[in-house]
Length: 196
Image (cartoon, rainbow, N blue to C red; front, side, top):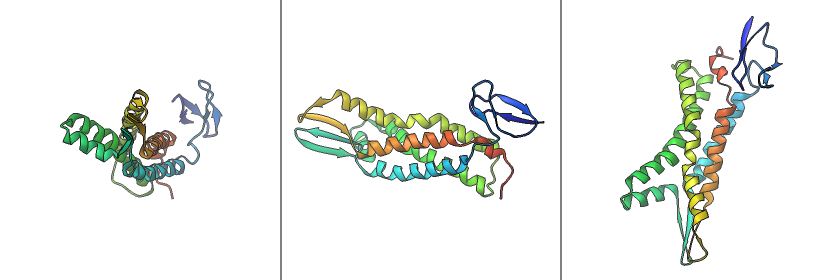
């Protein structure tokens, strides 16, 4: 007899072998491991890392003031808040838009790498890192919420206008892809014996 759990609803079954079957609670197909979970999650993480570059380099927000366009990147926005004395806002934007995404990406990449090479870390620690990544995933979108809110409220044609820049799209895609990468990863792989 073997124990196998549904990835969707977490119900545990006692079965004779690891053959696939339909969960009687949520109608999800229960398999021993999700097919190509590691490869897909790794590919999505690399894609998110590549999207992080234009998110930091290109303007996040374009402000039109009396016909003149003023573009600012995330880092330039943080610096301008620091110069104006708004340290708390600068700190929140730095944590949500720079620190959290980079930590998430490298933590995911580290977990995937640790499955291929021998890293002196317990499986419980890897699971805790993964749960941390899942918990903070959606909070990286705070910049996008601010830009979207300001763009929808402030629309005075050529006098004063705010719209999202190229970085807003890259940043949104990066956060969404990172969430998909974390969600697609089958954490049960961590507990498997070292594979060839």
